[in-house]
Length: 451
Image (cartoon, rainbow, N blue to C red; front, side, top):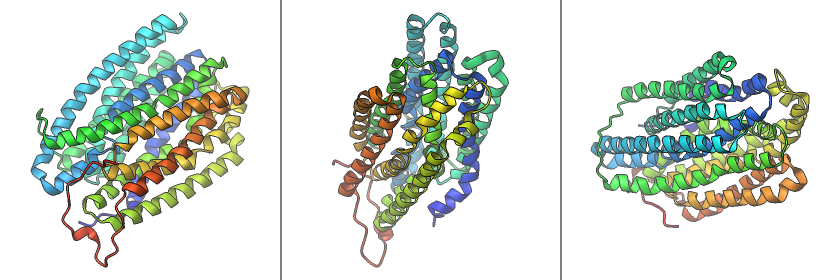
């Protein structure tokens, strides 16, 4: 069956993803208006970084992962084995998610009681519990998103995530006065649960079936090896926001972590929108071309994607830099946020925007590697990312302060994009030069790259 093009699919998905991304982007704006900057908002930013890093151990197994090309490959060769693989992945992942949520929630709570100021300790328990529940919901929702993506059901996935985002914002607005900052993680968890319920119904309508099976089949073992590399790479990269927050706290600027996070959210808005609207669709198309050994289509799609993403994000970064002051005032200039913080965030914004186009290109190239079964590269790339970010933080934070932390992230994105491109040229199959596309060739099982 002929699939709609990447851009045609994006056109159908974009309206719904716009709603979900607007909800995700609206939450920090509302937090800034409701609470301004304080020690409590810095704690919320720190907890967000910690649990986002932990979440990478869960959603890296599914969203934009090797699970999609493996499922497509198995569907071509042994469709009867797909329900068993889906059931095994879901069962093992849910057990891991429960264990991870309990361990991380408890550890963060114990640390907070031992190390935080007495006034902040009452916030630690509710926030840690809310984030832990959110991790469980995230695991289920991410698995269902991947299953729908493998069947090219992107609109259903986008609608469900949009509903979840709307629930998150609505609950946060309804509970923030009584619950304060501690209510925010619970609102996010509720939104994830709603999205997961919607996606479960969509998966059943799409014909997704699961058969619980704890046996370690060859397909499960192959997927485990690929996904382990993705988890390791993603987890290492997710250390960066935590390192940035620790460095910001060390500067001793009241609200420094909050300002760094809010300006970073604004500076990375383009790439955060890029992921769900474009990259998930791109991975499925690249994986399908790879499974069919249609190398010409693989390279054509990849080239168009790199040019489009780089040009669009580069133009957006330039506009954001030129209009940074009115943009910051428009987004954060209401409610409790003070004028000094707005001016400081406007100064930080260009340093974040400098890395937006390189980060977008790196994200495209990462999906290309995953679609080819070259997930093993992600551990090394994640380590490079984290070590470079830590090194540049120490070098740049003394002369530039918070701006040095933002600039180090942008420089690392450029380095990672270059290395991804160099490595891809070594592992990507050459485009077919024959008149007939390689689609008619017999598909070979997806192999792990040994490069």
